[in-house]
Structures are given as structure tokens and as C-alpha cells.
Amino acid sequence: MAREFSVSVRTVKRDLAALERSGTPIWSRPGPGGGYGLAVGSSLPPVTLSSAQAVALLAAVAANPDAPYNDLARAGVAKILDVVDPRTRARAEELAARVWVDAPVSASRAVRSALEEALADQRVVRVRYTTAAGQTTTRDIEPVLFASREGRWFLIGWCRLREAMRWFALERVERATVLAEERSGHTVQEVGEPPRTSHPVSGVRSTR
Image 1 (tube, helix red, strand yellow):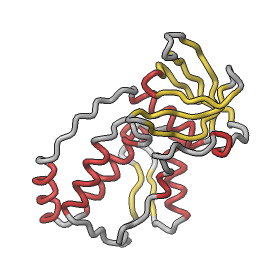
Image 2: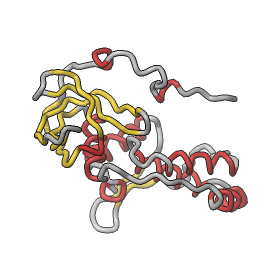
Image 3: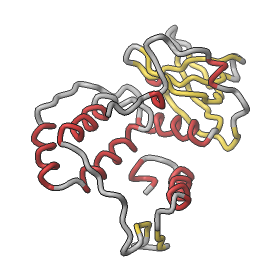
Image 4: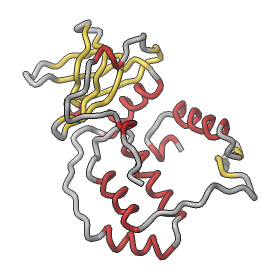
């Protein structure tokens, strides 16, 4: 499962534990042919989604390949489409064929996965980073947040090399390794206010 979604085993275990705490009846079977699944006879609330809403999700994910947790978002959208009614899914597939995107990936999948894991698990991450001036260094970073600015994604965190909060462009990170060490107490407030054109994704509200 960790390999399929390009995340760590720790992340999979954490998410499964969260599902169990929410009351979702999950079974597990060890060994070859084993895995995790939803208990027989149980069900989740039905998903009601229009074909246009489904395509909106597909377009958002496809147009932002460098966005944090994009691989998980793709998997989530695929799962949603698996449970919508066949007629809606067919309409969504037909409409999606008429929505084109051109969004090349600038950061490697391995780098993105490591940075995502470090932020989610609050761990220090060691990166090989090249600045705009061409200087390459190895740094230990305490990740605080991801930010998008002018079409580029950044990891913002406390740089132990510079002893200051820094913005790191994802496409300039050559390698990233999550360390066992937990990050200290650096907060979003230390980063300052987001740019006027930016806002936390938690600020998105339903338009219904």
C-alpha cells in the first residue's frame, strides 16, 4: 500500500488508525495475499457527485502535479469515481476528455513524497538544495508549511544551516531524506502573513 501511493509505511499506519478512530470498521490480514479492507456488511455514506464536479476534481489534480499530496489526491479522486453511479461516471469521462491541461512536473516524485512525509509527521528533513545563484548545499530543515506562489511550490521551514526561516523551491531540491528526529516548535506565525493573493486551503468554504 505504501509503495502504491508513494508514501511511508508510517503514514499508512497513521491514516488507518485515524479511520479506525472515526468508527470505520476495518479488517486486516497479515502475510501474502493479506491487506486491509472494509468489514463485510458495513458501508460508508453514499457519494453524490455530478459529472461536472467529478471533472472539476480531475482538472484540479491534473493541473497541479507539484501540489502537496497530489498522488494521494489522484488516488482519492479515483476512489470517488469508483463509487459514483455508472451513468455519472460515463458522463464525467466524456467531459474530462474535453478538458486539456499542460502542467509539467518540476519536482521528482521521491522528493515530493519525502517532503510531504516530513511535514505530516513533523520530522526534520535533510535536503540537497541548489539556490538560484547555483550554490548547492546539504541542509537540515524543520518543515512548517507548503506554499504556492506564482505557479511554483515551496517548502517553508527553519533552515538549520542559515538559522532562519527560508523558502525552498521544490524544483531546486535534488534529494530529500526524512530523519527520525522530530522538529522543534517553529510555527506558522514565524513565517508571517501569507501574500495577499494566498490563503490556507482550510479557508476554502462550500458555495452551497
